[in-house]
Picture 1 (cartoon, rainbow, N blue to C red):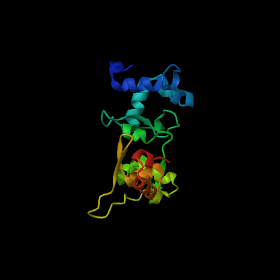
Picture 2 (picture 1 turned 30 degrees about the vertical axis):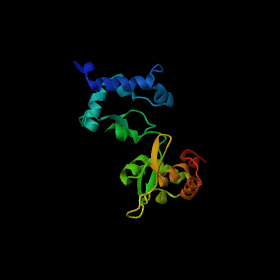
Picture 3 (picture 1 turned 90 degrees about the horizontal axis):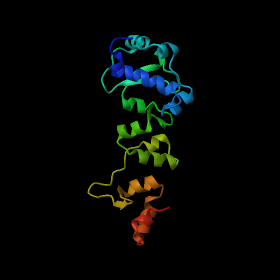
Picture 4 (picture 1 turned 45 degrees about the vertical axis):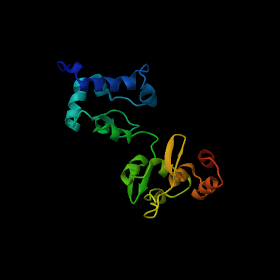
Length: 191
């Protein structure tokens, strides 16, 4: 054992990694060990081997914001399948994410939302309505200069009429017609 290593954050990373993969009592076990994810024998048996391999493969931890991440989310913890990653990078490596390819570039829906400054809810709503990825990722339509788009508040949320229409999958014209007939905002936004 490397002298004093037990008290280091790096040692705690190693111990937690082993525990979640090999101890059914660990609360994270269902997401790791129960899925068949393991720590390679070399690392499981020796903190020193883990420390040496990480130093050789990845170098020093870039910052306190970085931790060990598996490149293949379904693969084991082993030298060829780990990297240093931030929480944001790790979040993009989760199961169940929606990946979209646009103009030859593949990103998560959340990344496209940030990159294009389009709400993720709007992208989801557009895709649910059957629009192509290219159509779903088109920039927001802006109202003509000098003309403000109608803003509605319902269920403690304030959005433009276009945003409500996209989010709920109801045509803008339908919502406008309902409001013109005197319907309450909540009723106009119901399906």
